[in-house]
Length: 498
Image (cartoon, rainbow, N blue to C red; front, side, top):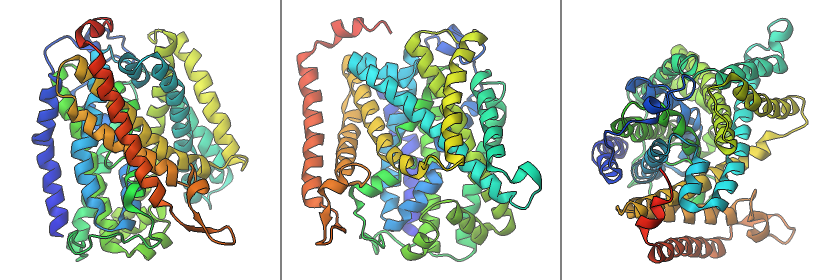
């Protein structure tokens, strides 16, 4: 329990101290923000700072710091270290720069930011990558809650027990949330659900203490406790994404970058929301370690809705069950709607379509939500298995984070500032992504992992994957250093037309 409290204290201190270092490195000033200068009453709208924070927290969180952290507990309390230091030195840095670089460039999407600092090829890759990823996330976050609502209403009469009914209802809401001004619907309901997410985490944390559960210490469990001996590197770093660093956050931060009244709000809104998510993840990881053995947690599905329900029931009783049901339904929905909204904005930036016009918004909303509806209905009717597609998200998520950190490093180079603050986590995440790409069975794992005589899985080929992952990370760092050595920052940066 001492190690948990220490990590909690370090996270809070990290916001005030390292978060301030990050802010000072970027250098916010008193320039007019896009929300004030462009204000279109739809996407560019000035919002109060507390509302910006709550919307950002729910945008980036959803169920990520709950499901991912519970799954991370399979490795034991060593996961506390990744959540704590990953949040401070990687996730918070990533979220702050993805938000503030968007703010400095008229609130454009992360694909456009990547193009500005990494070139046109990367911009086009990121455009396609972002739209596909966001539509996939939005669709899965419609199908999941629809299935849960169907289970809750399984004994209800008529269409209330139909998954298709709930899926269509959620997609209709997504269309409305994607189309309307951000302050009309999202700005009103998100703070409420954000408070629920925080209350849920606080309740679980207090329940662990008051119910007498013991959180194991890192120093007495400093080894791989995963019941299947799945390697810590890099599986744990991929599994616990949203609770430490997540590329999905970079697709969401531009939404709030378009609503800042002052650049100086960025520390609280972007870095602060990430630290808050880290705290939520730390609590849920502690719950997983305190309440279950690895085998017991696996029996509950590893870290899904069944485990969430059980944790809330054990720590908070009946109130916890109600919060669990609200959380596992509302949280993914509030990530799904902003995923589709972000997809609309990526396309709008791509095709230079002004979104103040309701006709232009319809032109983009209809195909984006139409594709989501086709995919969602395909799943509801059993024609598409999203459990397979979703496994790819964990790797692409961290790969996106890596790209964003390299883009931020180039920005800092052009600005003649300390680029190591982003280049170090970028190098680290390059190693994480490359290693997992080699070991993960949904990537190249089926080709390089060890096999028994009968062809069955016999173990992870870490002897090959680990060195290659390190070499790839060093290579990326070398390319970055070689590139900046060959460039004169000021003349190039003047062509960006910030």
